[in-house]
Length: 367
Length: 146
Image 1 (cartoon, helix red, strand yellow):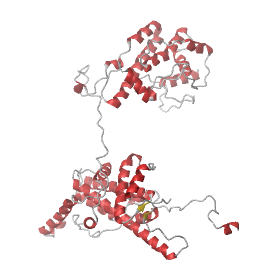
Image 2 (cartoon, one colour):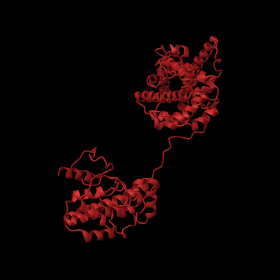
Image 3 (tube, chains in turn cyan, purple):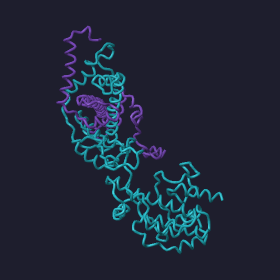
Image 4 (cartoon, helix red, strand yellow):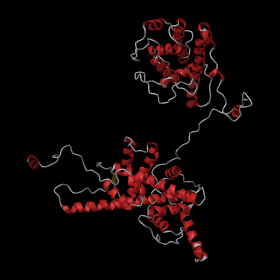
């Protein structure tokens, strides 16, 4: 694949900036490869070439990078063999001799040779003496740049006292209390509805799920900004986060958008109930929190009317609504089905699912 | 132990030659930047705080690239000389020197000591010049009619 060839180095560099990245297997090393390309191009130009094929240049720069890596590996190995961590000049010279041994160098056959005046070094000395001093074309800063990431902060750093003697102060501090305290208004709502153990389970799960969402929100924000921030007054930020991240966006309410979620046909009784449910306006201040309540409100009503058991009721409700995408951080009930790569047989619902939902679906199918 | 036979002065000269060379390296700026060399060495586990050794590795790899490039240049010039001798009807060969995969693969194979070249893509494989969609593509019309 013969390229037209480029006239001079400047043209080459400009084209490199405009060209799309080539598919190398080392995708993580694009920056180093690009720098190597420029360096190799400079060396080739000093040797006498006027233009290059793209593929040839990339191959040669990749080989050069490998050469340096091999040299480093060999030197490190030699140093470790001698019982040292840091390499010195003799390790490098030995590595060079190993690499040059295919072609041979002066004094290779000499068993008692000293590394200090090895033929390899003499070659390099001659090269340095002959070659023109062509410095690198660009100013390169140290890379890779290590990003300073502000962690969560330990108890000691925050100046807080751990809650008990069993918690050492160098561990990360607990998140702010707002993230794991249930909202008072929502709790009153559920108290009026609940009766019996089954609704108690719903309440507990809601208590776990909503603060999880709060915590996830806060965690996502911390990842971007660093430092913890209270969840309560940050509805604006939440909306901002939801604008950028589709997973944090408020899920659709029932009937808001026609989505082909699943071909499962609901029993008429349940679908009527769901259709007649009115969304509660006063709880709507942050989209994510309310959605959890609303998701489970029909389940509560279904349980109240005693249609079906807790698990399958939730399943039918979920089929009618677009399920909330949730990321679990290790809290939740252990399901019977413990295989992590459980592929749902219902291929239409290809979303991230709770273990509970998978479990209940399996159970309902068995029944 | 190797130096027991040598005089102390001789040993001192050799060592000082090496250290002088390393010192002179700091004046010479290799074409391969130090940052790239440091990155590649760090990837392979090489640890050394001494800048002179980084320069040594940079100079050594520059020497390697120069060797390969000069070999390819010789191949390229040989090919141009052979082409010019044939006296074709078409235009003469390009006067420009272009680094091609053909020349590069030949010179890399010759250099040969570098064992990881064996699995570098395309270097040891004969390059297809072009791909045609049927066997009669590019043939003369007269022979194609036959």
